[in-house]
Length: 116
Length: 78
Image (cartoon, rainbow over all chains, first blue to last red; front, top):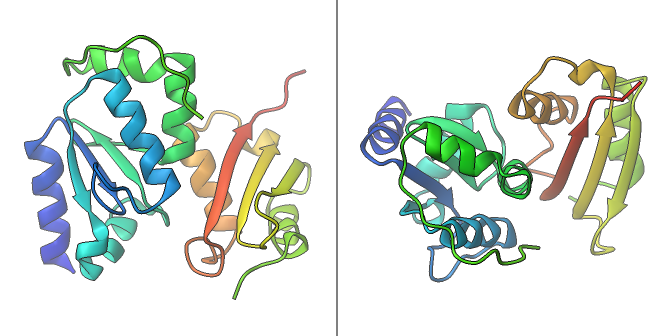
């Protein structure tokens, strides 16, 4: 378990935006994961997607890392931002855009698309 | 394995006695729920902390017996 936690720390430290999800960005295997992928794409932000379905240990490890029982989980500059509901709410209120700017993460939003 | 809306509500009610709780069974399959929870207990907490409080209230059932629970947490306005 400690090895997997080190791997998570390393992953979220070496990428600005990391999404732990089910499936990959082209083929999300769960609606909640798909929603965050869609938001990130609409925001035009580069992100590293990590498929937890490929690794049982990671799937459990990420849950205990944040004390958060569900996937997806989004990290910006190493900080846990939330799951699907929180990210969607932050997108709708514009908070996520503010947070990206504050953290100096480049993004270029496309014309505002409606996200379910 | 799934949980009924009554069971979910009972857990939430126990943890947040004063809360306004609206629970919706999204797919009619006792597996995909949406909950709106409004309680003073969320005062001063971040959204992450609020959701963690809800998950704690569900005593480990979130992500196991309960597959999908979409959450909206709020502090009551005066």
